[in-house]
Image (cartoon, rainbow, N blue to C red; front, side, top):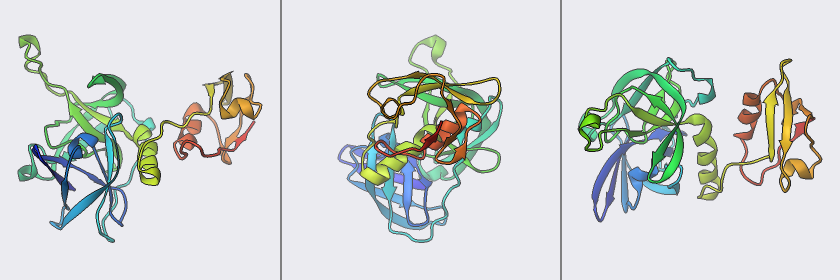
Length: 262
């Protein structure tokens, strides 16, 4: 969807992703920051006014809601499956709605790239798919059309002559990190932090997940989990790697209970 946010300082444009048929959308926080009116336009030219369900500046994510019942939601895929060189496409409104629905193609240039944004570090997916002002909040999709990231920023020249021609440096919030933020914003209207079990784990050579350290004051220590314990299941799902455990953790919010078979 196309998003136009009106504030006292003027208008800004961006892109959004449909989460549900009943009108939940996600975009970047900076697209709707300080907005007084948020207009949403769908690909079939329907117009809506959106309300803000929740927004988090640190993660640069916002959840919006429009009064609809029949939107086509995007399919979100686990970005943990990405590899450098995978083909990706970005969809959005570069430079505003005049170029609405523009698709650009590229590859995954790097995974888990730490980028400094307004004094904070964000861990992002790097791509060479062309991004411009107005692409913010739009989907980065894999070759199957599944959303694996939210396009968030483009690195550009800083005035230094040696950096004035920076190209092909786009960054997206990976789905592996934005899903639990979005769930928390919908459930509570704010992001309360990343759920933590209080353990570090490692993959063993025989395909098991082994506890390496246990931190005092967290749920795992309180329930008696110790170093060298083997985690077999989480919420009933078999664990063969750290990624399996992280996938289950992403389904929970702070304060939830997770059931581990040890």
